[in-house]
Length: 54
Image (cartoon, rainbow, N blue to C red; front, side):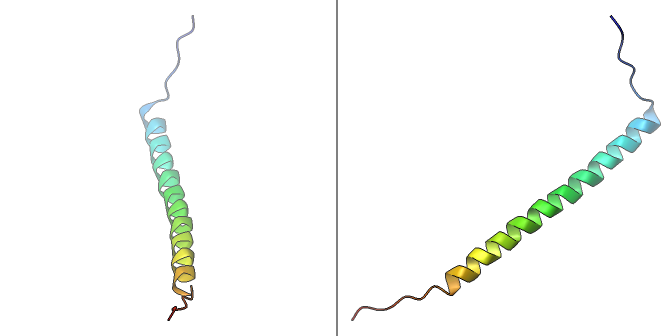
């Protein structure tokens, strides 16, 4: 059974840094889409006309 070779400390540090950058950018993109969807729903709600029955 072969042992799994772990990368050295410097390579792991770089991979961790890259993962953090990718995660933060991805989270920002998802947040932007959610914010735009929320604003679209809010704008649609404000333009909704209600007629009063008298």
